[in-house]
Length: 370
Image 1 (cartoon, rainbow, N blue to C red):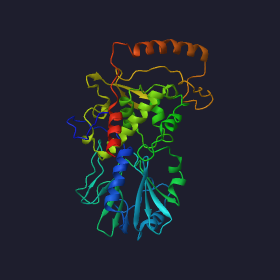
Image 2: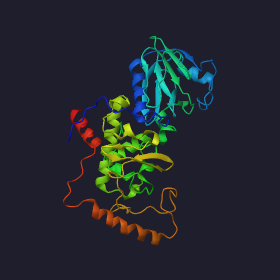
Image 3: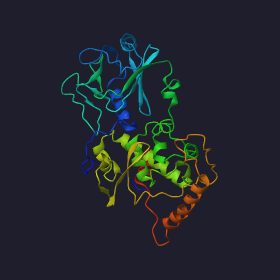
Image 4: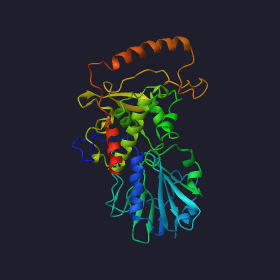
């Protein structure tokens, strides 16, 4: 179980527009708040650079109500589930809930900002450009929420945030509450859609986005179009270990891409630019409407039959994820033949077994250190 250390990558990443905050980026924002704002009282709440209130960003929230929920209250805790983060305010019944959309970010005056692959928040001027919210605390800290493309959302949630939508509708958080192997497998056993699409479903694994899904599938050697319900118990274990390892490693790095391991697909997947990793070509396809990078030589489709002991999901449910309903008998017959052929070619006796995915090794090493 190989030990891998976080280290500064010597691979120069390509910077493009298609990144957006996923679990590690939002966790880095939570840590930023926790390090500088916990225990401090809010003394001022301001909005756009010109003082106006962005009703698109502040979802179903009135300006006066938002100010009242924060002003003169102490920030006691910062929580996260998936891509959502919220604050606990002392003496208040309402909590601000943040979703960063595509370009939302937190920055603190004089202390830095969240790190993104696609762009940098300029904190040389204060408040920063595109600031939608600025909160000042009695300890001298000023925190800004910036969002150039305005796809982020800020809400007020009354009472228990985890008991109300949208947080109550989220699935498990891979960093905070990874299910055991049996429970993890149950989330995928009856899903007929491509495994890439299922991984992006926030009601299953909250916080997994496009780059994380591609990285996890690369390290677990799974083809992104492989039907989720066809995965074997061994493949599901590798998928679970890879998800845990990739997310833990990225969070330990503070979501700083330059600190990700050199052999990650992350450094080569941007901009649909043809390239290779470890001498193997990278291919780009679209799965579930999302650009998907994978390595065909490493990530091969296996049998599309449901794993042993798992019944196929009825066609009438989740139509967009199931196989087409017409000519089922004929289609099944076509699928069985190549499945046997692929399995027969998969593990010839003279070949050494494939290496364990990097993320699996990282996970087990991290567990050992803990």
